[in-house]
Image (cartoon, rainbow, N blue to C red; front, side):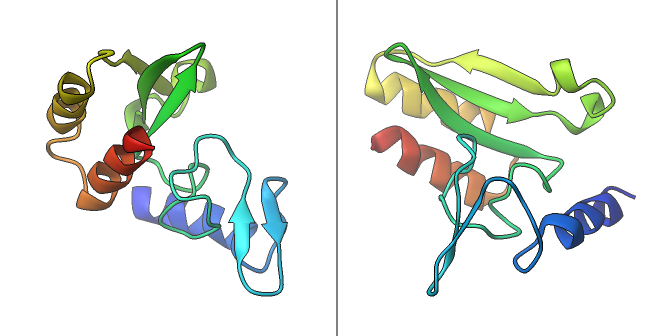
Length: 117
């Protein structure tokens, strides 16, 4: 059921269809959504079409790991879990490892890459 929902959403907002966050160039489509991990418009990196998603955001000099919880998809205001990260870079990386231990490697590597920037 979850896989079907993911595919339906992507079919609606996918590569060739309309999405308000999409920025189209002749070479590649980009995504302006602040929660997008890569900046590219793709099925794997789309925070709207994935039921399970994680990324790093920065607000007022503090970094947060935010995770999209599929169990809370019925409540849009509770959909994202915001986890504050340590100011220490090494501790923050360990926290990302801990919170994303059983997640797909794509999210683990991309969130660490975004934290490193």
